[in-house]
Image (cartoon, rainbow, N blue to C red; front, side, top):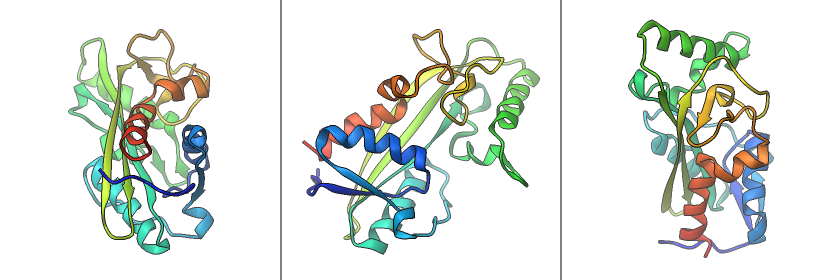
Length: 202
């Protein structure tokens, strides 16, 4: 497995919240982060039907454009009763003509589960795939999973996306009710990050 060398990492994202999360996770290693947005890079089209495929597109595009190793992620929620949907289309389910509306997406998702009388508990997983890509085309892939269930009604105003209807295994709170940094210790992204750090930064 290839090791990362250096003290600054390019993160292939335009999402400031995600960048903050990643910066916090890398802080103990003495590594600072810079985003694709800081370089003025366009967001590449995510044309794959898997998390790893889309993460690779973003990571390699940023590494190729800058000549720097780049970390990318693709993440979303998979719901057992919906055959793993929305999966890589998690953000797409929230798209409206005026921008993303996750409250609408969550409402529609619950309606789909009700329409098929999905049995309780309505099992789901948040998934995160991290790709560390180098300019020469090499990459390392790490996958993290947080199992849980879909609950209703929405609870909490922390986090983002589907957090208010996702209750992680072993918790009585939704991700939307948890303190942001507490959630970041147990999340799917934290799981993937532990594997990344063990594999490429130690």
